[in-house]
Length: 106
Length: 371
Image 1: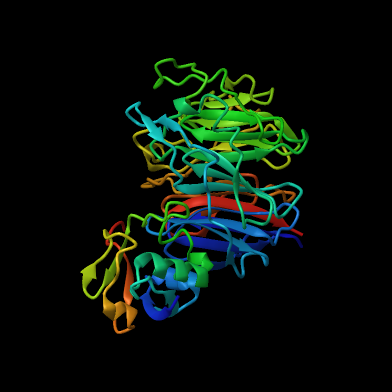
Image 2 (image 1 turned 90 degrees about the vertical axis):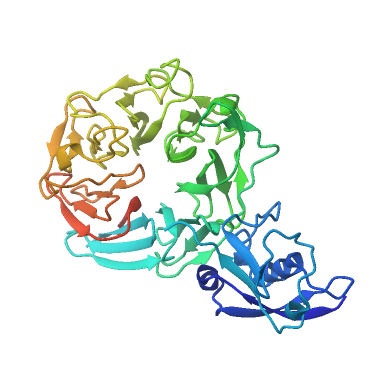
């Protein structure tokens, strides 16, 4: 199965935790149609940076944590299926996949 | 000269403070994990440089951090807390069944004998244990499953297991406390548990002397005499002389017996400390005067301690895990406030001075006595 190099932007606290900069590049498996999905990105991200396990999605259910959002190509993908194909621009590396902390709390 | 290391958890990070035996000048490092809530930090009794910290956030969930050099550097370890089997339900605030959901770790209690073994008290109330230095956690599900769990209900702060006491005299014996379920004891290292709430009286319960449902804020004991327990309940200060089998009230002449913290002098098992708070709806000291009360008689007769503490316009709270004592010859007593002050008494409470004054709200204070 082929892979693509995906750009992922992390919120500040997770950059500190993973000891990375604002954006990381990770190899992500493409699905059978050559597309990249949220699930594949998060699987690859957690495999590369295991300290992020549980901080973006639940360990067991893999449900997105309530105060995090997933953006790509100026669209909110948070409520889409984790297996829905993301835009081609993400798979090609032209656009990053954004993991964003929601505006909440103080 | 020996010294002390304070481990202070706040709403916006962790701080490590060290001093020599005089406890007058302090070196302060931090914030570690800036911006995260640090519910609790504690060191291993057998390896004081091995520290554990509970780091949590509404956005990113729970992390556990471990240090092998006394808090200079840290590494994240395991953060997977999964209830054993089908979690079942407890009571919600309105009395309806509500599924158990993991929210955070309130308290970490390292083993008395093994630096890699740690007990964790969590919300929704349960107890977990690691035996590999925090990499993996397993629930001691005999507590949640012993029978009364479906009747437990959260207090205002959540349904948290906030206190864990390890008995150094009786192998396998542990005491824990849950808001708002009560106190529990195991005599077989966590396999089986029983409620130890006889003698408690909570007027907010339909049956004020019910087996469970009491909002226990904190329990404490002297290391050399762990069968004698002291309790700060929602209201009432209590003691038990038989490992929790029966409690009697020792509020005595306290101006208010509401509060959160309670602790025991390191060398005098009958000397105990509380910080009275005005009421359950007004979480600040009486008349804006911050006072610690000390009893040298195991309760009932209390002495107000104010020397060095603010005696006007002080409206802070002292949360349940935010008092500690060291074991130097003159016992040191420490507490932190929701206003970000940490106070130290190097003379068992007779006088107080601030270690630091403008931290984020303090959630927990622990102290290590160093050689």
